[in-house]
Image (cartoon, rainbow, N blue to C red; front, top):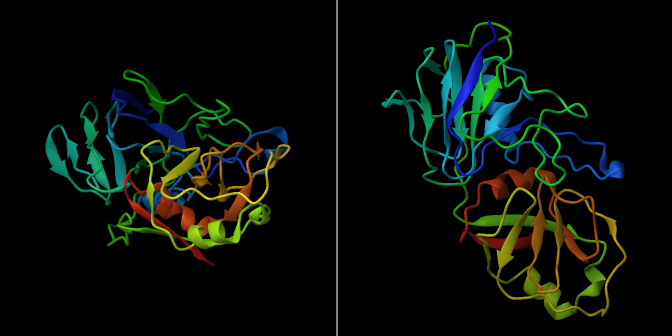
Length: 285
């Protein structure tokens, strides 16, 4: 019998994610994948899964799941309360969930995104080589709704013995290293100084497509608009309101607003866990 998880509570936004589908930008398809990739890989490692096995990525309010057979799960990423049938269970370590019991992943107490990994991985149907939900293009599984059923793959072997896992905490301040972007010359020297010296905050309008900021606008030196050009993961685009937007994994592959800078990919996991209101600083890499 196939192991399945029934969604008892889907939360604000719960999606299936793995390492994404790189290499398809020429088709207009972004990478997608887990925003906090190190958290996904660590949760999988604790279960003996492949590092890029598909997991569930929750947003702020968690989710609740009921397996039809016994499963072992790890909840990591953003810290949150975890219960099994109402009884407290471990966060950041393997938890046995008996058949018919409810694994409840509570609201994040810090950070934004928690990850629910299950021994065997989530067995959604791959699209272009990935099981990831892409909110921009609509590829991959749809975000979970109450009552949805998710299949689980066959575990590769027994779950490893528990270890003390080094889970990083969500940032109290998000410090993003930046390299000059291809359109930095579209901004005044004063705007470039502001960009790397002013205090910004994470906007509540941020999502998987981009981390929006609140703070001083950047003044352009060039008027007009650009023809659409290619956009990369980590690009910092500046729309007409002048507030920088950091492109995350579901970003569009083209855009017409100037890119003032690019954030290296290793720094993006912290951005995935920066809650609304978190101070943001852009610093030269």
